[in-house]
Amino acid sequence: MKYIGTKRLETERLILRKMKLEDAEAAYNNWCSHDKVCKYTLWNKHKNVEETKELYKMWVKDYDNLDTYRWIVELKDTHEVIGTIDVVSKKYLKFGSCEIGYCYGDKYWNNGYATEALKAVIKFLFEEADAEVIYAEHSTLNPGSGKVMQKSGMKFEGVQRSRIVDNDNIRNDLASYSITKEEYFNEH
Ligand SMILES: CC(C)(COP(=O)(O)OP(=O)(O)OC[C@H]1O[C@@H](n2cnc3c(N)ncnc32)[C@H](O)[C@@H]1OP(=O)(O)O)[C@@H](O)C(=O)NCCC(=O)NCCS
Image 1 (spheres, rainbow, N blue to C red):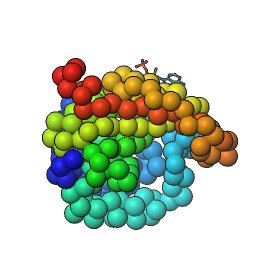
Image 2: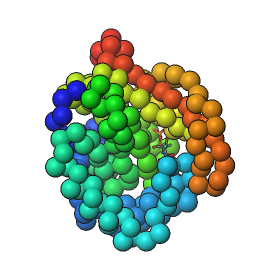
Image 3: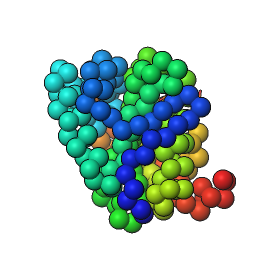
Image 4: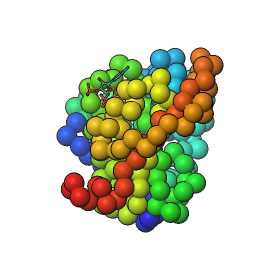
């Protein structure tokens, strides 16, 4: 794994860039404050914009660390910020193993944006950051997220039983997907 930090990425319809403190208000309004968005996230919806600003302050500072890979996703045509995608844990990063998480405002769902962004991040992590394996997990009650993983070329690994509790206090299984460097380069 090379620690090269969060680089600006572009796709057909999206810009993936470092977040700024000024993004916090739109992030709060577009997704961090929505029950629907936060139902299956491992974090609770934000109570107020101050909470989002505090988080963004911390995240902006975290860009000083070149092992931080975290993007805010912006629509190219309107410049609205619609969500985030990041390497959520640095636990196995030293082995080149990157766990991805993502979250988008419900207004923007089902347009293919999450898949477009995940494909760009997978490309960057394998082609530029020299990742070995990229993986992600989702609640089995949130199949749309699994679909994003499948459409991005990840393979189903299995289900970890009864692993998490969602924000409605319902215990869920966690499905895991991954793509290895070898699988990626066989296709690209
Ligand atoms: C899950 C999430 C990232 C999907 O984002 P998105 O931009 O709508 O994703 P895409 O449009 O690229 O793809 C979604 C796919 O899931 C499908 N889908 C949506 N809801 C579904 C459901 N309940 N069951 C099965 N498939 C579903 C869509 O039809 C689409 O597939 P298609 O292109 O074959 O039609 C988005 O809903 C989100 O941010 N949710 C809240 C946060 C979250 O759950 N993050 C993931 C935590 S693991």
